Length: 103
Length: 402
Image (cartoon, rainbow over all chains, first blue to last red; front, side, top):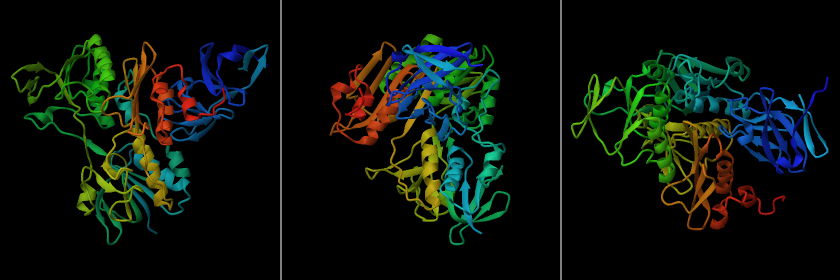
């Protein structure tokens, strides 16, 4: 069954940026793309336990703050070494200016 | 059939193997790795977990198999027959090559004083296990050298309850590659945590239970670790008659003076854009040069251009730097009381280097943007660099979205 969690206000994330969202012992990264779409992935890089929210968003890519690994945050696909394991992604919807994620 | 042979199973050699395959190389690829276990990343060695040294494999055996990369463990390349394009391994076996990559890395510099061989060093997993195994609470450990490795070790060892003294030949810690203001803050944190740091000292002797300084002082030491830098492992290059000078000399495509032999990573001295040969000792450089060498051996014509980047974690502080950060900073950006970035411009106001210090990964985003600004090679407004209200991304993309 869908479990939609209210993560943040849509305005909490700047365009082409990312924030960290912790919920029930888990950590997520929520992105706002340059074309104003919202996405959500697991919060930690698959290479080492580093919060992706400290990384750099350029276009549709998130770059890990430590080892320069990259993911396409829309699909979770690992696109540059050293990462080779994809990120889990989660559905996102907007409602009344809030960002909801399905976990 | 002769294929690619890679001497060295570190980050650089393994990266090169995968890159050559990714580039479409169809021949055999053999990595000759001196250490007995699966290749592992070295940065985690100075960041141990509760059980001791952190072993983080670079790849799984399955991935090597999928990419048809042969990994020979516990052997090294003993000699190179350049005319016959054949290497002889330490176990006596021979391997023909079409392209050979020397990714032999570097070895810790040895302490030259009397008793210097008593000092441990940190390069391999075995080294790390020895050091952390000896670092019981209350044990007096002396770290010689206040560079990045020495200071990271000091932070780890004091955190494990050891009593730690750091001895440095130069006038201040981290003098080689960290801007003074940032080094001062990191040093302050070490002192607050209880690390003793003595600068401008020379070592006369290492005895069974002390380090004796040139001025006669004696520093009681149960364990001594020398962290006084590394020396490139150029033995094979030299014995093969390649040009060697502080590293195996390579052009921008990472080719040595023999077009069938490449060198990359810690052991390579690379011709840079400004026509100066430079050797880099960072994890990212090992990856980048490994990637370029691997692809070029497979037929690409990529050039190494830098800039080189590194990070260091000590306590909760995270340092990152990219490019050339020597001398006086042109602009300083203080994002908040705990986060600052120093920017270095050339004569044409183009960014050539940046260094930042903050809690955790607070400076990571801006250092990555700084790297892109360095690569862009465009003149920048120094006032904007110093203004924390200006997003660096907007300087990279002058017509950025709001």
